[in-house]
Amino acid sequence: MKDSRILVLTGPGKGKTTSAFGMALRALGHGGKVAVVQFIKHDGSYGEVVALRQFPNAEVVCSGQGFTGRARDEESRERHASAARDGWRVARQRLEDNSMGTVILDEIFYPLNYGFIPVAEVVGALKRIAAGKVVVLTGRDAPEEIVAVADTVSRIECVKHAFQQGTKAQSNVEF
Ligand code: ATP
Ligand code: MG
Image (cartoon, rainbow, N blue to C red; front, side):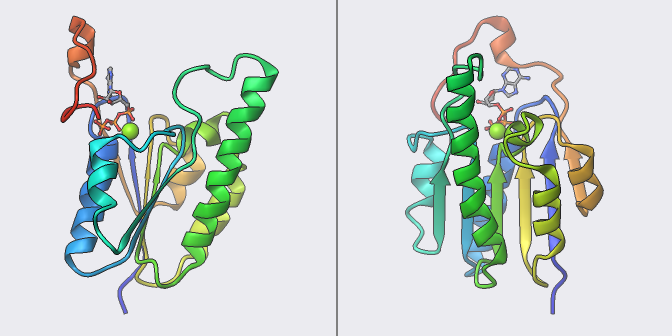
């Protein structure tokens, strides 16, 4: 029986989400089942989401309320928190489902750092995953409790990014 594996992709540079989707592709190529739960993002128009949904063994759930409206007022904060909790309910179920070989929790560090999802709950669920399961968590600023429980942690640095020269987000590169 293979070991379970928890991977963290963090840091300020570009390439965390796309690397996690690369892992999804790798697992699908071996006939595995993949679940992606995206926090923050609420829109299925990202190219990688549209592409992955074409595989019968892949599921992508977008549970976020978007990057905008930075949880300023109480109402918007509650909306983001409630969306994050909905995403976490789905994620927890997929983590417990032994038929799901790979589970990707994309941008989960934002709701953890905002306190929308208790870090201890996620750590507990990660410690209980079955042998052979692969879990990938992405986002800037991985909480240290998650880093501690992970087997592999990569931190992507930002040497430079086109946005800093005023370039706008574009399809095939950013979405
Ligand atoms: P990608 O989805 O391309 O793999 P990412 O997951 O590493 O990027 P996020 O932190 O989730 O990046 O940021 C989301 C968006 O912000 C991406 O479209 C990305 O191109 C852009 N971005 C990533 N890093 C930077 C940066 N250092 N400066 C400005 N924009 C960035
Ligand atoms: Mg990302």
